[in-house]
Amino acid sequence: MEIKVNSISYVIKDSVANSCSVGLYGSDSNGNFVNVTIKIELSDLTDGKVFEQTSQSDLENIAKNKLVEIVAVK
Image 1 (cartoon, one colour):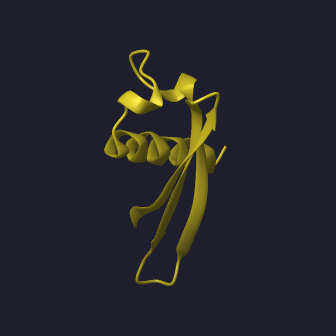
Image 2 (tube, one colour):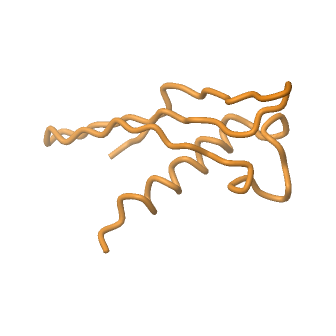
């Protein structure tokens, strides 16, 4: 299933982004559908970066990786 981004929203406090929400969606030819919002914290960013230093593409990849972790069957 191809998963695409439909939104990125930042939570800003004292002029600094301290988290963001990434909206993801997708569907397949079998009628399966997913629509989810993934919260990304500063601790999820790599190399000590802040949100202002992180590309939208990187946020998309982080969100997709978190989605895989969240929906993994245990």
